Length: 242
Image (cartoon, rainbow, N blue to C red):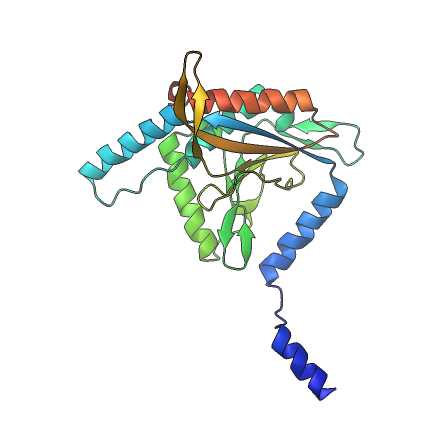
């Protein structure tokens, strides 16, 4: 028996699952089992948005070299806020008896933050009423609180919709799991330059992959396509967001 034990210890190491991951895993498992997920995919041309963002970052860096470069994420959050206002079924929760939905009159967006032993989802409140710069400041604030394990319960409650952003890591597509009682979640992957036909010729375009998972008891495929198309329209033209 001792020989078998020593042999097994040579092959693998048994490691306890972190407390955060246990909680997250339990919730994800329940959501995956209880919600009929469908995921739709799309790509968005963010060439002009990225050019604007880079120019703005460069100008601000000239004024203040401690300036934090604005990422694409606050623009995505703002576009989602407008989409939630236009398509309120995405800003809803299914009732316990599954016969009605509650349409929310506020727009709060949760953003998944990767931490050492799992993830947290702090919630940015009333994002439809905040500027891109304010949203970016809040993102930095909550990311730091998450990684320092200092988030309060109020920081993570009252979400309407969640964004899971893996763009800074890599990958093309994924199927994010809905964060109940919400009815949809947007996955963001790494943008990549691709040839895009403009009607006359192919031009290089920075394409952003988006993955929208939704609760099929509440949302149908046509509405999901309209939601993604609208988000794409906003992200493809910076004038809609500033």
